[in-house]
Length: 336
Image (tube, rainbow, N blue to C red; front, side, top):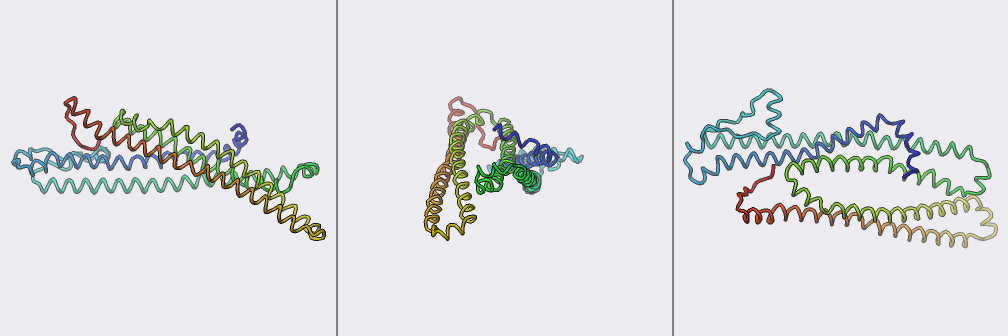
């Protein structure tokens, strides 16, 4: 990681784009987390209205007992918006008939659906702006890196070019710089997304149910260990692929430069065999990299599935059994 410190001046040069990228990443993840919260609030509000008004009516309770002058409570987000624009949060009420309740439920559902669509629309906008800042910044840095390397090549003495193959030098300014750009752009963007999403999501989860949150995060250490091990292997295999690609580039460059010598001495077949041998070696190293890389997603999917199973079990049957054993009342509803 110490070698990456050489990129800090480039980050500083485009610090404005990078700062905007940080902001857009945070906003993208904030609206990603907010959208499911809106759905949960809406379900809770609709279930509350059904439990207080419609269910008693269907069970034969007298209307004058059900409609006692109370109102349908708005979800938290709609209540905050109502207070912000100076409207009463008791807009749907008091309930006098079954038709009033159905109209209130329909209105709340429509408003929650509108909030959900607005949240995802804003998420899409900020996601686009994230790529227009961080990914474009990485392209600018890639251009600057290639320009810097080319200027350094111009300053090097002839002895350097006698000791190093031209194909290898060309590979470094093309393929290697492209790999560095993947760190400067996608790696930075996805890393920021992961960190901000983790804090936002875990914060919301802890607010809903701390115990269930700990159970759902239990597989996380095993996931981190698996990703670390697989990433280390990927790094080794990728380095081997890059070295072999440099060998191929050097061989091709030398063959083109000395094509007249090869033809005059009738060495085309030998050169072709050497190239085929090195190409097969490159293929095998690439396949080794692909095999290791193929372990990455299955490990993540398996441990995420385990987290989902634990969440469903602990939050479902196990929680119900525990509540029944202690004699507690356990209303079946979406957790707030």
